[in-house]
Length: 293
Image (cartoon, rainbow, N blue to C red; front, side, top):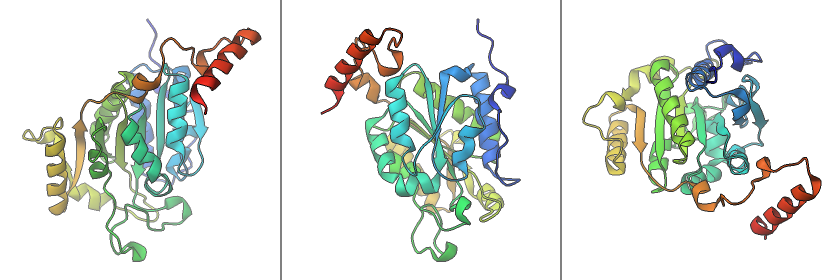
């Protein structure tokens, strides 16, 4: 039996975040979740986007990749398709994921690959001094638009299978959501999207405001997270009341991307035997012929 890694296994670098940043809680919960689930460093790949949250992949001992601005999801999907045996996690912020990366998020909901996306939402561009982001409220630094709600966006895709929102101020619940999200992807059930309300103490400190507004649907016995219609209704109802719903918003079923397009008879790129050049070249040529136009 493999001994589960200790938390220390996953902390090779010191975070660069400001003291009190919500991202510290996200990293701590992720480390604990990986330990609890016995996921070893060589079986994990963490890809990150741009921004403060995008530095998280520097802090964990695993395979890591810092993607281009807004492009973390296609890179993450590529890693999963190249080696489905890996636990593949994407991480980023609201600016990276909901602005330049919004198109990729839409298509990830649509295609349903078995990857997890932790999106740390602080409702501003913290790395570049606090400009308004796609989730900023009306009036913040002159913002004239309603903030985007990722739960409503995800629910609009009939192919979405796991939607949850946590709060860095509630690490116990966040841990449950994170482990459920990892289990969802490890089981090959598709895309697990986990937004985390992660306040920026330097440019937009919303700790007290968000703590007062959050409504935990996990504690609502009347709420059914397996009903897309009920989830839509609940999220809209709570938003109209001035609340922010947190918890497991929706869990459904839909074929995952890899279950549809990955040929189990085919030797995938990361699983090829590179010790024998001719055999490797043969597999490579077959892969190019099958997947490139």
